[in-house]
Image (cartoon, rainbow, N blue to C red; front, top):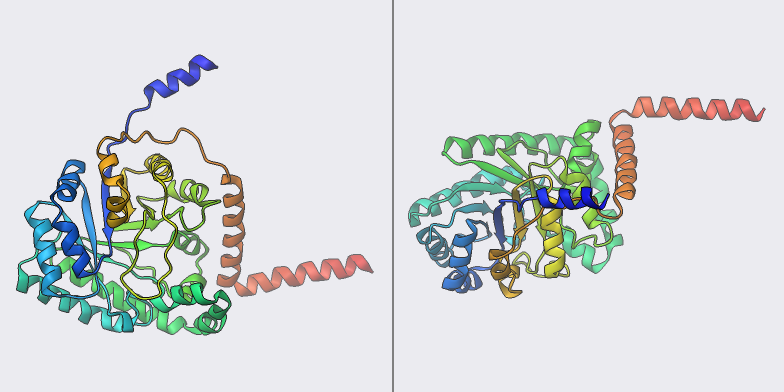
Length: 344
């Protein structure tokens, strides 16, 4: 047995990862970050890409993008809304998404910016995250009415599908960043989570599943393992930082050991890995450590995998029930009749 384990370890090779770092800094702090030659050199050594969240299209931000272009670091642009319009692309502002993309396109042409692609970050609006921090119970009146927004969801899907086609026609590859629960909803044929959370299921060239273990530390690694097995690209984190909007929750950052563990878990399933965030990695010294770190794919599952699989099975049952209400009512009615007959 010892010899077999030793042989297995001997055959494991460091994973050659394609790393992408997400960056959500405002223009001033972004300018300072890209002015640091050591940061640019580290990104070059890693062969890494950067995804930039763009809530404004200012000359200062354009200068920062040009600095990354000059350093030959591939950059994916993520057009966003102003904070007062939700910040993220959402189910509610889908009708304005194409106009916002056109603003980004004009800004790009005006400043001669070069992009490796365009990202769509379709999430609940910023106010949802702020409400979670103030009082989670306040989500009930905020999200409850969304259960009856089937038409709004269909319109949003049409709008975002048209946006993806427009971006492709402009010569860019499109990627989006998605909560992994969406795969359970797809299999169940449900739209409950999309209506409730304001998500939109839209097809792009690369779908990145956000599997941040920092959000649910107890079962985060197990979630990464279970959902990662089906992912083509995985985002891990967070190492610190966050959206440049007021009152947004600041999630406790991962330590180096936790980040290294998540990279090992993710690399078991894919080499296309995103790290949130670039600024967190820089401030914590992780960017330097990553240059000399050989990621070995995790040899075994972390603790909690059985719990996650059980929770996922329960979620699928609920989602299937919402997608097939008459079948569900029929089954429940049959069970009631059996129990009633048995009692007699």
